[in-house]
Amino acid sequence: MKYEHKTYQNALGLPISVMKTQSGEFASHWHYDFEAVFLLKGSVTATRNGAAADLRAGDVFICSGGDIHSYTDPSADFSALVLIFDPYAARKAGTLVMDVTVRSGVFRPDPGRPDAGLSPLLDRLLYEYEHMSAASVFFLYAYILEIQGILQRDYLKREFSDGGADSRPHLHRIRESISYIEQNFAGEITLAGMAKAALMSESNFSREFKKITGTGFKEYVNLVRLREVAARMGEGDRGVAAVAYACGFQSVRTFNRVFRAHYGLTPGERLRQLHGPETA
Image 1 (tube, rainbow, N blue to C red):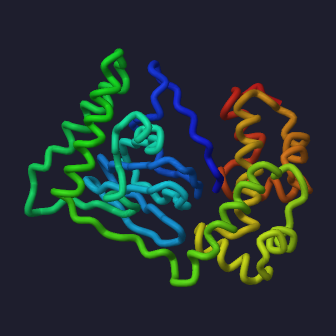
Image 2 (spheres, rainbow, N blue to C red; image 1 turned 135 degrees about the vertical axis):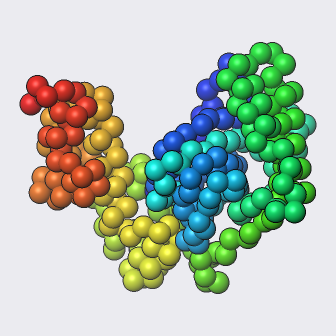
């Protein structure tokens, strides 16, 4: 789980990202941008602030800014189109995309309206994004507005609960904890220290962290560190033990256990998988 500062890389520098993906595992994270996931094939579980929803082909998951969300348990045939954009930048440009009428939730096709036309619209959106020209800004925002209209008129919306009536007051503190851990994962991070910083008891912090994110505190810290180790391994760094220590793991034994539990491989096996059988 992490706070993501979104950067947008496209030919026009627009605050929009559109991509197709077959990877349905996204750890808990949050950002201020809107995120829309259109499930093209298969199924996946989406979680928002601790509340889960099972998505299937045809469903759309909308996540508004600031919500902690994740995707788990994708089916083997999972495929989705992901749209992420900065709504505030769009408003400054005079375009009210995904504005007040669209909040976090799951939109399911209405059986009474079988010809909503969302699928060909998504194809046009992706094509325009991948083949940008000077006029693309008009088409991209127009497609997003049309998507918004179709969801409101032709889809059935399921609201997410907030993971319990008492969880909302803790969201800001949990977000702050996420940001701190993301920036300081290499140092010493303890439950006691994080709970104190959040002005909560250890038991309450641990409980709310798990309720809101779906991930235990200790497990999350290990996963953040593991993600950084894996990234450095992918970049060619073969001094795995030194990297593990540099990323905050206090012992090689703990690192090996966590690594194998997550990847199903030892660090050495993963290195050989990445860089070939001759890797030391």
